[in-house]
Image 1 (tube, rainbow, N blue to C red):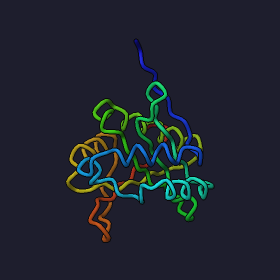
Image 2: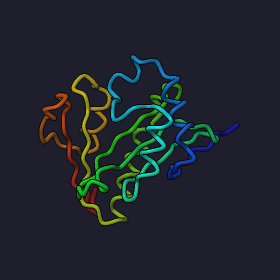
Image 3: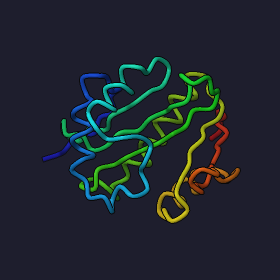
Image 4: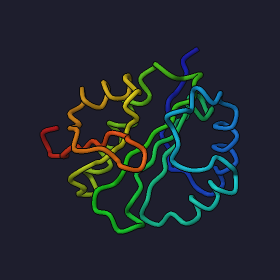
Length: 157
């Protein structure tokens, strides 16, 4: 049987689904993913307050396999911050790369010329993926030593 893959924009109705999925994960798996608290209330607040920020769920045959976000617009930033979480059950299957291509297209369609992300220096797999797709190291976040990457989005990349 073939499984389907879908990317859908998340809304307030999805807060408990996301929270439950993250809270099921082992802390070791989530050690580099620390953008916010994982409670239902935290997600409900984030999703209900999002005006320009975007949150997208990745579904494999109607099962939440992960999500990605483009944040910072609501705080006035022109360059969105990309962040992604893929369930351990679906890791190493190309879904992170899929979310990046989706983000590139979303940004280009909406005339967003740059994308930013931060990655923990020990997250070698993520760093290799981002660098292979043209992200350039531009600095280090003084709060947590994460590496800051930028990617210029043009019609050619």
